[in-house]
Each structure stands twice: as structure tokens, then as C-alpha cells.
Image 1 (cartoon, rainbow over the protein chains, first blue to last red):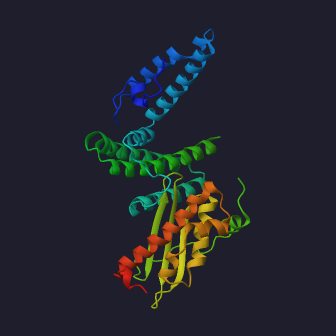
Image 2 (cartoon, helix red, strand yellow):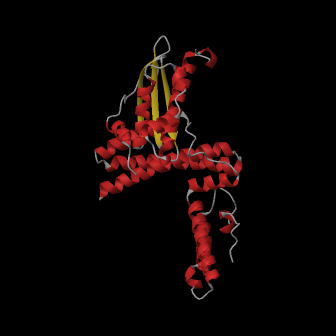
Image 3 (cartoon, rainbow over the protein chains, first blue to last red):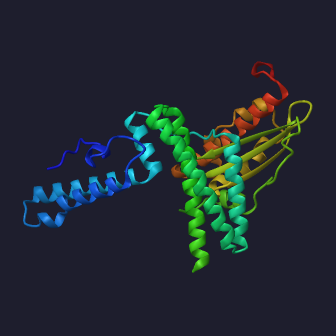
Length: 176
Length: 133
């Protein structure tokens, strides 16, 4: 039934590219889920039940990875044998770090003032920066095969994903 | 996860928080960041005529361990030469603060911040590595 050696793209029947068709990804995932849903194997042998479970888990993992742009780029680099060094590469362009610091300061201020409007505005700014970086990623990965450039963009997106999450969390907290 | 007493002490009473004038030729600024956790650290050093660090300031956005690591290194580097501070290892910081393995990257960030600040200062002053005694 399953081929555990397939990578996430192969599993979901997509070309290994950064630019993907989200509708196609969703559709392909739903199809696999329907085929391997553990409920379909309740009458099967224990081996079949276990395989369907593993297969469903693998499909979940593949979908989650490909759905998220940062994770998708990280995975594409992983397939190329390139480590994104998010754990140990601390050298980022100074202006990018300045921007991160500025965002952190503003978030702190806005949270302190319980200013949801200001937090929303920051979120917008972060999303637009993310979109810009994702466009750069597409060029680096799909057109130029510039793996190191792509790895640096992934590190930047990793920062932005984190602060976005924190700001969203703060907004939810204030809205409650 | 519980923080050690030393981490809590630096976290609650951080030493040397603030900024120095980054345009001052005797000030070196090091900015580093940890993508995995989103921490950002700025460390600034000011040297006197004999090349000794007479002041240090930091600003860190991150977890308690990252703040404690940067606070601790500002204490350690004051009164030392550039060469001496380059010898500070992240393992010294981690050991002093009793950081658990998952927080070792915070001490790495602090070590990298020192290196970045020293490199910035040397570049500013046009010092080549071998000339710093």
C-alpha cells in the first residue's frame, strides 16, 4: 500500500518546487486520507491496521510540512542536503536584526498599552515582509537553485514566524 | 522548566541594560539572532585608549536564559582586553548560569555577540587581528 521511501512531494504527487498549487495539495491530501483512513482497516489484519496508521501519519506530516511556506522551503533544502542552521547560525544582516528589535519593542509597547489596533498594524507589516521574503525564496529555490541564499531567507522567515505567533497570541489575549 | 538562581537573579536585576552611541569610534556593536527561537541580542562595548573595555551595554529580546547570558557577559567583559574577551566560551557562560541543554543556544548567542562586537570595533578602528596585543 504505502511506499515509505517516498518524500513528501512524491507522496502528495507534487513537483518538488517552492511554488505549489494549494488547491492541488489539499485535494491530493484528502484523497490519500480517504484511502488510508484507519477506519477502513478495522476488519483488516493487525499488519494492515498498523500500516494504514503509519501511512496516515506520514501523509499528515507531509501535508503539514508542504502547507507551511517556511517548512516547505526548509524541507526542499533538506532534500538538497542543505542545513538551514536555524539552531546555530546567529549571524544575520544587521538591518534585519534591527528591524526584529524594533518590532519587539513596538509589540511590548502596544501590549503594555493594550493597543489592539497597533498590534494589528504590526501584524500587517510582518505579513507583508513575509510575502516579500517568500517571493525571494521562490526565485532562489525554483529558478536560481541558490541554496545558501534560500537558507538565509528561511532563517529570516523563522524569526518572523515566531514574532507573528507572539503578536497573534497577544491579540487573542487582549480580545478575551 | 525551572531557572537556576543565577539566571533568575540576572533576569530580575539585569546588569548594564541600555545602549551606547553606535557612531562613537570607540564603541563596537554586535547584533546576533537565533532563528529557532526568535531571540535578538545587541551587545555594545566601549574601549579606552589602552584597548580595555571600560563599558558594556546590552539589549536582548528573548527568554530568561538569553537575558541572563547577555547580562552576565557584560559583567565579565568590563575591565578586560579585546583578546581576553575573545577567550570567553559559551560553555563558561552555560556553566556559570547552570543552563540546561535546551538553553545552551542562549549562551552561544552571547558568545557570538561578544565576537560580533569585537569584530565591529576592530573594523571601525582599522585594527588587523595580529596587531591586537
